[in-house]
Every structure is written in C-alpha cells, then in structure tokens.
Length: 447
Image (tube, rainbow, N blue to C red; front, side, top):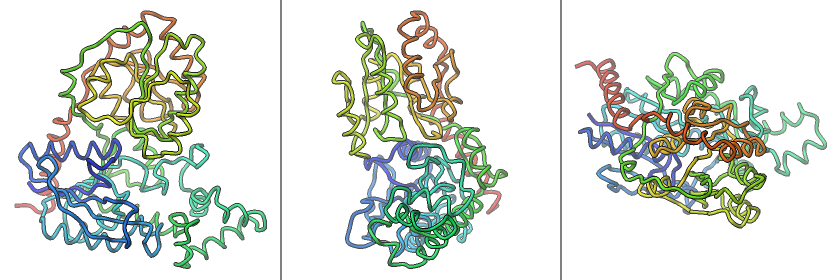
C-alpha cells in the first residue's frame, strides 16, 4: 500500500511531539512493508519569496519532500496560513507523482488546509489526525495570550481580537471606538491586502470567518478523523468538527529503548520535565512550585528539552530559576533511557488543553510515575493516586503540595510505580491504521 503523509515539519527539524510521532509512524509503516512518502514544510519563515522550492531526501528509509516556505512573504499571511493556493498546487504535484492509495494528514499547521481539499478533489481516501486545535483556533491551543482558557470561537471578532491582543492597533482603536465600531474597522482592514502584510499585523489580520469555513470543510473532507483522547474529542465536536467522523485513538509510542533503563537511587527526590521549553508547557509553573518547596534541599529539579523554540521565554525562566536547577538541553529518543533512569517522577505542568502528552507514556515505559495538570487530556493517561497525581492546572502552590507529599509519604512513590501498566506501542498503531487504510481504500475504490 502506498501512503502519503502530510505533516507540518519532519525530523531532524524540531517538530514537537506530534511531529516526532508522525516520523515514528512513517518509519513503522515503512518497516511493515508499506511505501510511505511525506510532504512537509521546512525553512519556515526563511527565504526571499513565499515559496522557495523544495528538496527530496531519504530519512531512515522514508522519502521526505520538504517545501521551503516563508509564510511571512505571503500576499495575505494569516489567510494563506489556513488556505495556501501555492501549497495546494505543490500537494497536487506531489500526489500525482507518488500516486498514493491513501493520504494521512498529521497536521495542517504549515501546509494549510488546501492540500487536504486537493486530495479530496483527487478522490483519495483521507485519514486526518487532530493533534492540536488548529482547525478551530488560529493559535492552535485554545489559550488567550494571557494564558486564560478560551471557551471557543463563538464569533469571528472574538478570534480577531484574541490574535491582535496587545498590539498597538487593537489597544489604540479600543480607546476611541466602541466595540461594534472596532469590530467593523478590523473587518474592513482585513480586506486590504497590503495591510495584512504590515509587520506589526502580519499573521494577525485576516478573514476569520473564512478561516473557520475552510478548516471545518477540510475536516469534513476527511473520511476518518482521529484524536487521541475523549477530552479533545468533546472540545473539537463542541466547536464544529463533525462528530460522526471522529474516532478516539490514543497514540502509541516507541518503547524499545526502555530495555536499557537501569533505575538508580539518590538521596534526593529527582523531579523532571521533558519537552519543549515553551510557555504552554508550563515550565514556569514547575519552577515556581520548586521554589516554594519548604525543604528544597531534598529535591533535584531537571529540565530537559529544546530551548530554541521560544528563546525569550527560556531566557526568562533560566534567569529567574533557582541556581541549582539542572538544564539538560535537547534530547533524542536515544537519550531517554539514560534520562529516565535518573528520575523519580515526571511533571507535565501544561497550561493548555494538552491533547495527550506522549512523554507520559515514555515515563511509564521506564517505570516513572507522573504528576500532571488537571482539566486536560492528561488525566486520561494518568490515574490519580495509582500511577500518578493531579494538581490544579496553572497552580504552583498545588503542584508544590503534591511534590511535598512525595517527600512526606515514603510509601507513595513506590505505590505509584507499582501501578504503572504497559503502554500502547507504535506497532499497535501501525496495525490498526494499516487495517483502516485498507478498509477505506476498498470502500472508496473497491477492487
């Protein structure tokens, strides 16, 4: 079977948990006997033109086409982020050359929704993974810029206002216009192409009504939509994603490295964070909680992950954190056994509605329990007081309380370790998805 995968970025380019899962899935499918090719963006925001060509390369036996896209040079930057005619053309060329049996969409974030609509026009079966909230939120996270949770895109003005929050254009016009006048002004401004390219408004001024129409049309174009948790499914459905096409399927993980885990002991409680060091991951919440511990001398905090995604955020956290925090930097799957062998508990302090949190599975594979934010999908992976603990999302004092419990209750950590169950593997995903591809192919193009 020939499988085309659309993704946002692809390793070794940093691409977050969803991107690394996509790469693992592509390699797993290839190893299972399928033929896989990937279409993704690269050199994002670089180059003299919007589209600067592409390169084809082979990564671990998977053929990858990287489109060099500088979204900042788009005629209408925000609108081309969700509907790029140029990337639609590139997708059409790619599909015509590869001639896949099925298209698996991992992300629309950089390619826009147009390649999905092109695949539908070509009558190809489509499976779409919803790894974030891009289809219903221009910021992907359902978080406002002040980190408060959004209740959903109830109006186009609400979305435009959210994206423009903090800009001079939004602030100054709000001082002289009432709400309806301000809404009408930005609706009119968004129709002036040259204004959408003004540096202070680029990627923020656009047609949010059309964005919603296009992204939900792309969801409806898929034969099957997949999201990893019930929590995420309910949020997506409540905001317009078609429920009848949406399945819940937890993402599996590569765990072969776990055979190399050698648990070590220490005279301190070793607390770890693994993931991109970015605001929505809540690293600041963990640092604040660590600072509040009454007997911090008995705890060691390790922070592992890419610090280059939001360098200003990393710099601020590094500057304000206690001097004894260990900053491990970027890591790969090859490092997981070593890192997790030297951790007692993982903390996932996300402040956004995290979709699943694959790092929890990796911690479980190594026998490390997790403390996670409540009111998120993370609670579907962790069972409180069994294989981990919950704390109030965004609350450093509550996280500190749970960490303090691990110091005060000597039997708690062994109890949490003993209740960790085997995790879902990537091979299980490969088997289930291969069967799904075959079913769709036979349904749409019967032999």
